[in-house]
Structures are given as C-alpha cells and as structure tokens.
Image (cartoon, rainbow over all chains, first blue to last red; front, side, top):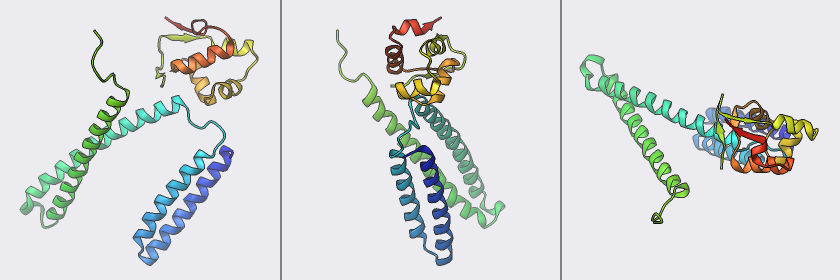
Amino acid sequence: MKQYTYFLLLGVIAILEVGIFYWSVENLEPFIMTGAVLIGVLAAWISRQMVDDIVTDERSHLITEKASLRTLQVMGITLFSYALGGVVISLGGDTFGPFSYQIARFSFLLMFIVFLMIIVYILFISWYERKFGAGGEDEE
Amino acid sequence: MSGNLVPGGRMKNKVKVFRAMYDLTQEDLAHEVGVTRQTILAIEKGKYDPSLELAFRMARRFQVSIEEIFIFE
C-alpha cells in the first residue's frame, strides 16, 4: 500500500469516527463510541503495517521518544499542580462553597491518575533497564 | 539501536559528497539504506548522527570505511 492510500484510509476512519460519535450522542450509546475508537485505532495500526514505503525509521523513533518524555513531564507537572490546587480549594469548603466537594473528588481522582502515571513510568524504566542494561555479575 | 539528535554536533560527514560521486538522490540513498529521505537530509545537515548500524550500511553502500564518511572533530 502506498503512503498516500494510508493517509486516505486514515481520513475515512476519522470521518467514520465522527459519524459514530454523533450517532452515539443521539442514541446515548457510550460503549459503541468507546468500541469504535478502539477498532478505529486498530484499523489504523493494521493499515500502517501494510504501507510499503518507509514511513518511520530510527530518527523518527528517537523524535517520538523525546516528544513522549517531554509530554509526560509537562502533563505530569501540570496535572499534579492542578490537583494540589483542587485539594486546597476542597479543604476550605466553607469559603469556596458546596462545589468544593465536587472539586475535591475530581482533584483526588486526578492525583490518583498522576501517581498511577508515575508508577507506570517507573515500571517501564525498570523494564527497559533490564532489557537494555548490563545485568548480571561484572567480569573480573 | 538509535542515533543522536544533535543540532550543531561535533560529528561531520561527507554523505553529500559520496552521494554526488555515486549520482544518487537523497531518496535513492534513503531507500537503499532503509530510512526516510528526511533522515538523509538531517544527517547531511549535521542535525542527526546516525546509529552505528546505519553508518555501516551507508559505508557499505559507498564501499568505504565509516571513518571516510563520518569524521569526529
């Protein structure tokens, strides 16, 4: 498959996803939408495997790695600071009104997500350390 | 195995010269060594140091040693 055909297919998948989204909203079908996203991503991934041209190489992988790491750092800090701010608002419930309890729930959920993200990150780091590191005893 | 993204790095190269000697376009060379044309362009501009494997593939394509193409200053 040519790269052009692949991009065309991506466009078709995107249009289908938008259509399914509208349909899901009209018919209140959240599971259909969730499933459609997963199937869409899978379809896009399979299409990409079928492209004959060289689309990615070591340089693009390196760029993706760097961009992913920076995104993780920026998002982690942003979410964590936002969550902490929310916790402060929730602790001053009387000052900030009844909505503060909803904010508190959301902030704690957000903090849980941030910590989960950090744990997943550490697990991946140790996984790749073991995979690409020099494990075992040092030769004397 | 991956290279290094180094804008203004200390590694110089003669890829463009060898490409001209063999009358190859960036697209041709990219296809032969299995990377995208953008990667060849980045190497020629010194914005990307290729992995050892890619450097070997390029050297093998031009039938020279790696040191003849890539110079560490």
